[in-house]
Length: 261
Image (cartoon, rainbow, N blue to C red; front, side):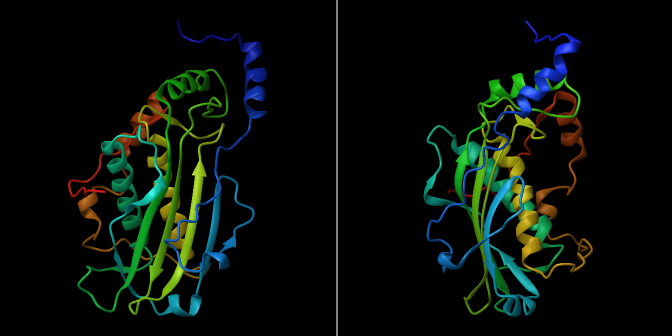
């Protein structure tokens, strides 16, 4: 039977949901992938993500070309056994895609054969599952309430990533430990067990790419030819529209060059 609430009760239900813990974000991890993690600075004032980071701006000013190494799952990371290999590849593929999209607006992307290029590597250190049943129930409740999407306080997923940029001579010039969990408001659910993690890959990529340049640096135009064309269109309008119709995030499939992790 579909959920139904009298109109007079809907504001009360919304207030009850807003009174719940707003975010399921866990602190960033410390796995040893990043150098000098004791010197990481915690970013204050963030609403949804928890971020720790460090950078050498002098070294970053000299970076013009960047090679993106494939994203990996951190060995020994917090990855539940219940998350299937296909779902893991789904998140890894989206992380590669989004890093390519965002980094190409900041640097010239080149292949690994370029000796003068900096290297960027990201590793997934934690995956939190998204519960499909809870997501579907959340979508049903959201249709009855004003103000956008709401989530029930169960089955919310998340993503934690560590990433670094090493200069051509192998020195770490920037590092970020990033973590985000789905909140109660404004975060669509998903029928995929990694739907939240998949969606948050774009948020991480945007934060990391922006951190590698000075504040106020204008973005580059999308290169022509696009070095990220193997990942498909930068804006997947069809999937965005489908997600709005059903009230759930629809993950984009991984690229064909999936790797064994």
